[in-house]
Image (cartoon, rainbow, N blue to C red):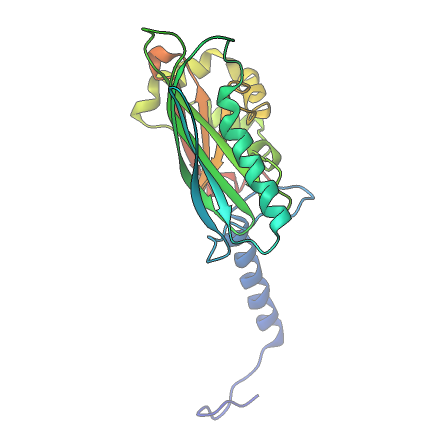
Length: 247
């Protein structure tokens, strides 16, 4: 094989095929970010570019103010409506369980964590005062939406929370100084207890003790802990930590 400016070059077919295979493997690893889906298709974690826009909508009633995102710009309007309905339902789940005749004070806003081409991930944060003269309780829960079908998803749909991974959380591999007390609290739940929390996570507000979110670089997990030690403990784990234990 000859190339302009080069007199001659030996083409090694076996070496070329190996290089192509290596490049394909690297591409798959980067794109999937070490997700484990079993037989399911991988979600792309590519940041969206002009495929849709995010706008803020508000729910207001007396002392309740909830800001939540909605998307615009999808060519499939039916799918867009379903996605927005899923996001809104999760945001307003904070209203579930309010006793009749009670007027709590709720302030809620959101932070986009991942605006992907196939996955949208949002964290809701704020405060909740259930009864007069009660100190505000911190609020943290999430909404993750499959942009292919508009359905709610969570970490449990993509990761196998095996013993090794759960032990890594409980025994402090993925924590900083702020999490010391929370980690000690999780230790008291034992490994099997934490696994159950992880596998039952990502319900509506108040229906789960663990919520997950996704970023371009890692998985976020929020554990409910007693208000005396902060109310929530959020861990962010780089996807590369899943490359061995989660396959």
